[in-house]
Length: 204
Length: 311
Image (cartoon, chains in turn red, brown):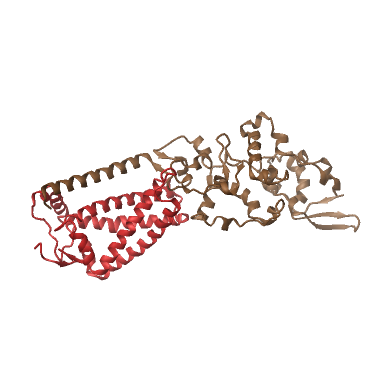
């Protein structure tokens, strides 16, 4: 069981994942630096932060398109499909494991298999991030690159302001996800086994 | 001499039926029928026929702009000699000294809130004053035949920006105008601003003076134009919660719109969204608290896992 090795991460998924992670990191750091810019305490020089943010934004969009195409033409896409029936029950079970069971060395309610790469909580959070938050941040980000395309007034609100707000909000959600994601990756056979799996492709 | 009118004045054309046309419009029409068009016509008694003549383009004034300007109620002869009423004009009239702004506006309580004296003091410190002769007067930027106050009256910041930048560009993007008082070639403002990210966006959404003038707290529009070496080049001067745009471009909006919906620099939000300058106090607080809770949660969970040596 624990010693069983599963080849879960093909090369294209690993390459996409690490590139995506690097771009996310640059985007979060430069985004925070711009949003909280202060002449007295500069984090990243503003004009550099703008350039890096824009370039990384374009690159991560391209990598996202590759991810979507990859999920359509390979079997990887099926890991991102969830059944609604019994979803809350499964989520609750997994949540309680992380809250209590994990400290009692309880049996994992949804162990990883060839058919089940993600547990219910993982699956839901990945679906929400990859299919809701990411498209939202891409659309708003590209709109902010071409602000002349944004509707000036949307139901009495400034279109530009709403776009900026949505961009920052989705960026915030993705940042929180990234933190939690990195922490939960330490929950494996060993604290580093999941990180190794994303390097060599083999889940232990 | 008989001055023949071929082109009708726009103002007269647009006057509604029954609407009273101000007296100065009728009297000024005598001037605008020649000085409002690139060509004028007159009866030449020497050759005994009507003649079409070219007007010096620097002496052509748009009557429509004039009647929208601050000086719209003036007769041309309020500022120019009444001898101009005779055609052809006496050559000696070219030497007529022109009024300056301060000839009328200085010490006048009606205009006290515009602070003309302080504007002059600021102007005298500016590069426009110390790099040029006395030929650089207020008229170089504020054409008395078309100028109208903008920052106080415009309902759209974008319109104010376009109008104010148009004043700068009338010389700095026009070689003929620039060389009226300068020998050197007009620098290309696009290449000199190459360093500026999103150049087009900045040109359309901020005025030249935001970066090129020294902000004066008591003046609505700064007139102390700085040498180019002293222009603002640090992005965070504007892109920060202490944005200098609040003391310049959005100063009027800030004064009249004290309302705040939790936003730092809320006045900017009416027209634009400036990264780093528009921050919402409550959203900032919520995001910090949320991040804090996530960190604490991860920390506690991690510590418990280590202590219990499980998971």
